[in-house]
Image (tube, rainbow, N blue to C red):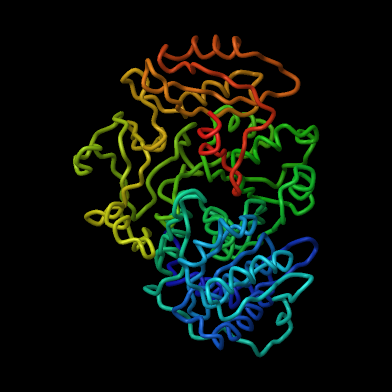
Length: 503
């Protein structure tokens, strides 16, 4: 699996020694080498250590920036446990999460200072520190040559509390050790390898999210590449950066790929340096994948993961067979099985669509402060994902849906993703989402929310006829609603919870 590291801080230490003068971080014209990066991490780590963060939580309420990268590595270098949260959440959404994390320090963007300070007071936080251009910059140590990283943490120490489960109900803090995170980076790289000291990766997905943290922030340090950060997604600046910064890897999500494909300038971009795109966060419809690859000439490589699993569980190999709608092969050193829902122990064969369970050195050690949920999710050394999937005869994994999103129509199991894939093949469809709604006769029925491309109008009857031609009758949505935009969560996923509430 390539180089083995005990922690991601060990990766940074190696990059400082082997590629110190190479460009490490780029954001809005600011550029740091690996030597700069390491000195800034060392300087802030010393400060955090003096605040007593070793063995304690540090909450990060920060958007994409160089400061975020330095802060996360500094927390780990100081022996702290990082809990990176969405800075766009409201105070009421964040309060129970921050209370559960019980942090010693909150690091936050300067523009949300009032909210961060209120959260800090409510949770009894010792230090609340504003960062950014209007406060203090963590690049202040970049020229101090005598700074060195402190003694590094152990692989068995807790590194991240990755909160998952959204803002309705209680968010669950998945506890990951340093070793789990570091091992998982090498596991993923074995299937879709990055070239050492050769990649320039464009990151527009939020760094507080586990996908960007693993696939962008940590992976570039692992391979001593350059991370080009954009603070927010806007199609035109992203397209310009792909050419100007000679990007070799673009990490996106289905929502971002959809937006770029719809931009009038997309086909005119210079993609000559681009060698790979990665997609994560949610399933990428096969038709979108095909269209994106046709224009860019670079493969879109999909994987599958979740916060509890380090996060990557499987990945399509960059070299070899990539299967549309599939999420590839299990990562080396990890085990993936399909098991029955009744006992959770009977292993099923290819073609059977039931629950996915995972085992390996990359999975979490439990949920913070939630022993019952931990016991239900971690059983016999296996992580039960709550996802429905199947293997094909070649050992490739396909995700069919979330167990909780499966809809039972007239006694038949229907996986909304299958219906969404059919809708995406209609030339007028830009985005589609299917949810279950109560139905007196069928028990549950399907409702499809569809946004249309401006150049290809369609109506409900046309969409229904399209589905009837490709699906069994019970899988055809009973209801269609054409909307201007489909709601998204704070990390850009289609918000099925909101859609179910509206339906």
